[in-house]
Length: 100
Image (cartoon, rainbow, N blue to C red; front, side, top):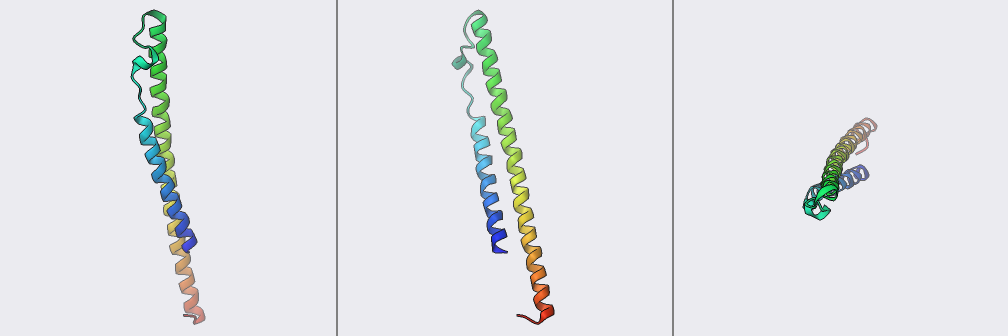
């Protein structure tokens, strides 16, 4: 059962790393001026559109990372529950066969 518990720990670590990566994405918000959004005319419009698209894309990736992290944490919990169930079955079997 330690293998399942170790695997669950690995999923927990991956979930934590993915959560951290998702949070870092939300801080990658360059100012609109980086895209030329303050420029005149069509170039300024294009810069504002690009900046908006950047924010939307990175926001979406952050939300996807959070959702994937939640799923990894769920898998880790299921693995731990399975390990407990296997341990219980092993204990019951040992009791029936008289093994200690």
